[in-house]
Structures are given as structure tokens and as C-alpha cells.
Length: 383
Image (cartoon, rainbow, N blue to C red; front, top):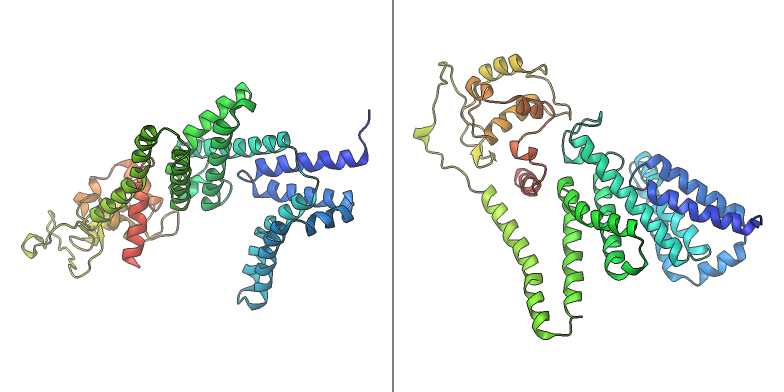
């Protein structure tokens, strides 16, 4: 039996949402294309009287749309209209998707399940692609953790990972009876992998939000336990989560500000080759507790660097920073002197990292959170 015109539009709407869900973490282009498809189908479908009634009876939809409209009004006071217009184009999904979804026929529970499954699949696929790029299996240059988000912005991808994790938790713990075998296995693998990848991605915004949500959900679940003894036994480790987080952060800050003692008598004035050092102990910048601006011999640095690297000492790294400053900071982070002897102790991986703009060797530790915290503290302390 052929589909009616109304059923055709409903099918296009449903598969358009699936297209949008899987595209969000993977492609700005296909996300835009899916929104155009949804909006075109919404207009071609007609039935605007029904849609108007749904709009009038849904105050939450007014809030969503008003946020975008307020943002649009801000264009009149913008000093950079070109950037503002581009920003509005990037946020058009905040208007189109709520409008189309909020005024269309409500989705069934099964349809919503399918859409979320495709969204989690898209996020999972994006994370695997990022891991492949990090391992060097893809022809993509990854200079730092921000480059790990191959398709969309680093922060936006991290927030999508958080949403995907929440969806996985919801289905595994509250809707597990409705899942097929494949879905259960996929969601369990995702529940293990996505939090790990969130740490690899080093997005503090995503990690902090995930931490707050995890604590809130666990805290709420504890008080649903009827047995008081079990409730108390579970409550203690839950409370320890924020405490350990605070202790970890405190230790990271303490470690950053633990600086080597600088005795004027310990400052050498000549290199092993007899060339003079530049020492500026008044400058207090440090890397891993070592002072940056002591024991610097630029003549030796330039000579040795140009011997081991194709990128000139006076040139720039692949991310636009100066090789000279990056090299000095990197050597300092390893506790090496900024002279010929220091450069000779660098490995091929160290040299490649410097060429890509890595200014501290701890930033090469992809599976630790401390380097990201260190970077934030350094930025606050420096600027």
C-alpha cells in the first residue's frame, strides 16, 4: 500500500532527524544539509494551523527560539558585523531544530531511541577517528589535544560526548530491557570508552560538567536505596569523589608552584664550550619548576637546532609560535640547559614535538589530565 502524502513527510522528518543526529559530531557540512532538509520538508508539509497550535501550547519552545532571536538582535550593536553574521550562521541549528521538532508531530518512544542510538554512534565514530589520527593511522596532523577533534570544535565535541554518555547511562540502567543484544554491547563499550576519550581530549569544560553530573546522579541514586546500612556504605565513596577531585587539583597547583631554589652561586656564566650564558633571574617564568631565563646560549641553540631540524631556529612552529621560544621552554621543562649540550639530549620525538609547537614535554602525555590542568594554571599565572 503506497504511503500517503502525510506519511511521506513524517518519514522524511524522522530520517532527517537521524541524519542530523549522526552528522552533529562528524560534519558541519552534512549537519547544515540535514537542517535544510528538515526545514524544506517542514515548509512543504504545510498544516501550519496545527503547527501554530503546538507552538502556542509549548512555552519551552518560546524560550529556545527567543534565545536565538535575542542573539540576532545583538547584531545591531556589534562592532564586527561580519564575524557576528558568521556566528549567527553557526548557531542557526538553535533556531531550526527547536522550531521543526517543537511544532511537528511528536516522536514515538521507539523513534527517539533510534535517533539517540545514531547520535551515540556518531560520537563514538568521531572518537575512534580521533584515536586513529593520534596513532598516526590517518593523514591528519595532530599538534595538540585541540586537533583531536577532527570534524567540529574541540569544546562542542566534548559536550556532545557528555550528552552521549548520559544517553548511554539512561538506556543501560533505566531502559536495559528494551535494548537488543547488539545495542547492549555497543552501549557498554561506549560507557567504558567515552569517559576515557574525554580525558584524552583534555576538555576541562566537558570533564567538569561530566564530573558534576556524575556526582549529582550518584548522590541522587544513593537516597533511593532503602537499606540504611547499604546507603551509608555507598554514600561515603560518592562523597569522596569531589573531595579527591579537590585534593588532586590542590596537589596540581602546589606542584606547579614548587620551584627550584635559585642560588646566585649556582648560576654558571659559561657553557661547556666556553661560550657566555645569558642569565635573567629577575624573570620568574618557570616550566615544571625550572626557571626559563637562565643558562641560555642562543649562539649554541641556533647552531645545534639548525643541525637537527629542517625548521629554522628563527622560524615558526606548525601552529604559528616561534621556534626559539618553544625550544627554550621545552628544554627548561626537561630540566636541560639552553645550550648545545641540551639540544643534543633531545630525541627525535622531542624535536618533532617542538616543531609542532609543544612547549613542555608533559603535554605529550595524552592519557593524563595533569598536563591540561598545568596548561590552565600556566595561562593564568602568565597572563
